[in-house]
Length: 247
Image (cartoon, rainbow, N blue to C red; front, side, top):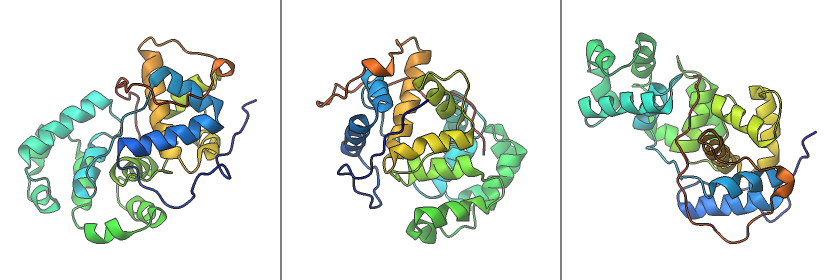
């Protein structure tokens, strides 16, 4: 049975916090590794995870939608072709781009429809919304599911407590980290992540890094052997996140 470790009441502010720099990542890692042996285990193998901050607003949503249900490499290739063909990548520019051009960039018919449906959003208003309202606003749009909304909150808004339990690589990473026989469902992953509030966004980055490191041949250590590390380690960039993502 997985032991639960709460970060609440241990000097961690519950106020809304944004992840904007490596210092924010370090603060989150410090809190997580003090409270949770599993997080200390991940950190011992991977070091500090990358910041992963993307553009907020329409460009960020385009990047995420392009990556739905694709590997990291395939998503990056499509996004690269998009920004090469549409510069600057604004709602107005994409709305006036013919479907054939978007298809040539690698977008499916469904993703083209999703992106066209996002061109009429009020992005100034979107940026002023709290995380919960923003998530619900995005979910109301065609082609936007929980994964897309959660990744937007994590990488574009930098919400420190955002989490994407539907991400396949996160689920497999949790399975590896807790040495489970089965991969947890999205609901189970979400429940497990409750112990990492208010730093679930940093926990997710550590889990992705751990997943990548283990897949690349890194030695998986047992939780009991891990001790929190008080001093920052040298930064190491883990392999890119893999897995299949859903909307």
